[in-house]
Image 1 (cartoon, rainbow, N blue to C red):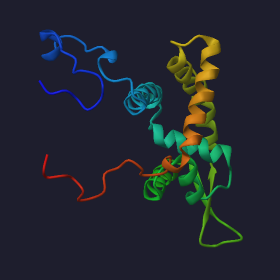
Image 2: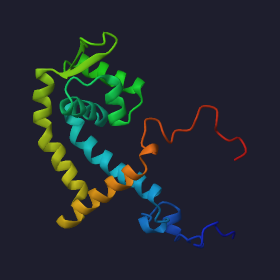
Image 3: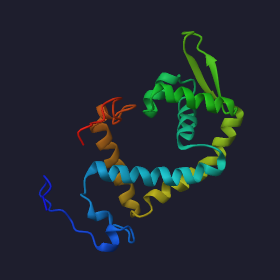
Image 4: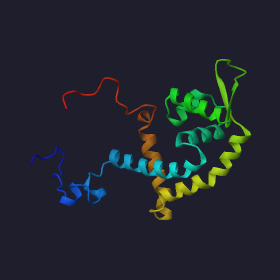
Length: 184
């Protein structure tokens, strides 16, 4: 059996694990930031989406509502940058939230080409109602950590993201169209 390029020999699975009849332990795979970040994102998305499912919102819609709440009068371009969501998707999300009566676009008095975003009364009310549930979901994400570890973890996570901020941008990591290798 060929060895991988890294210094770890390939791990052997039990027959049950290889056939899907047993869960494969997380530690079977390399402890690499990219792999663990993907798994962490799955945990976060799963818990937040579970919380929002019966409220009629997606995780991205909730992010847009929260972004507009934090920076009233923000325009779509700045919101796109702040949330690291491609502008076309922000536009679609704002359209959806506007159709639900949660967000309102108003013409910017200084630059008539841009529209400022505001939460409607209905949006403000819904956001207030959902906040305790989303806070509880975020607490559940960090529940396996001791209280003093939670703050340290978040500070380190922020440092890693800030230290690599040129990669934290909308659409980064997506495969470019037509770039799929045919030689696999």
